[in-house]
Image 1 (cartoon, one colour):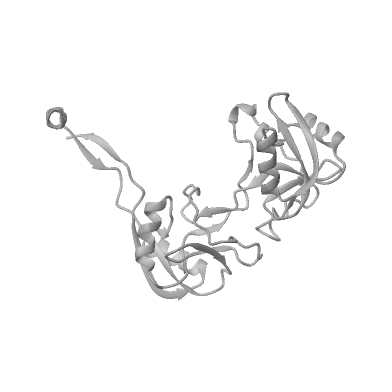
Image 2 (cartoon, rainbow, N blue to C red):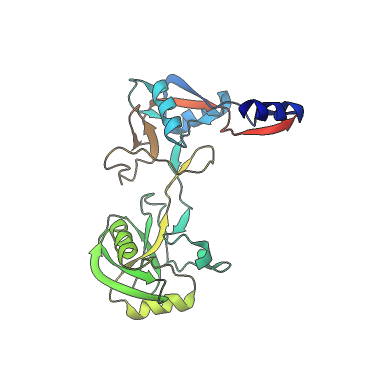
Length: 258
């Protein structure tokens, strides 16, 4: 059967070719600040190292070896606000982008770790540390209704509670829903908006993570990612460290006529 498939491919004049260059990591032994390392990688290679899956991290680990924590391509993303309830069918056009920020908010310019959003009693929104303990709003898809839960939890624990007992933390899609939540509020409370607070230096999607226990920390100045051969931490960007660059792109093979 395999021979038959191979013959058909040859006869049809097709062959497999890579869509791009192999992705290769390069260890640079010259200690630099994170931004200097980024500039060096962009001039000399492609960019600071990115990691998209376990195989990538295994290859990166081989390059790092016993060198300790080195700079790689993680940096803060201050704009990637998302709703906990990801189902796009829940949102009509423009509704996922509805915002009701309080004056001076969001304040991520002060702390890149204020990545979770609470509704104040006046109905406006405030970004806060996700570890803060607050009541929260849940949304029930079956009844299309909101519930105010008066028990104070971190944003992550509130999300888990809503998903276990309702549908998810509340998305606020328009002024009408904002008024509904305001009507049942007795204090500042979590809603479902949060910021995916990290991105890759090359702009590629950030999904795979391998953080050390209790990382990333919420220290305001620790805004750049460093990797060892075991895990990741966030660190002060002005520290000088060795670093890892990459060349090439992430590839998938495709068929091309010969």
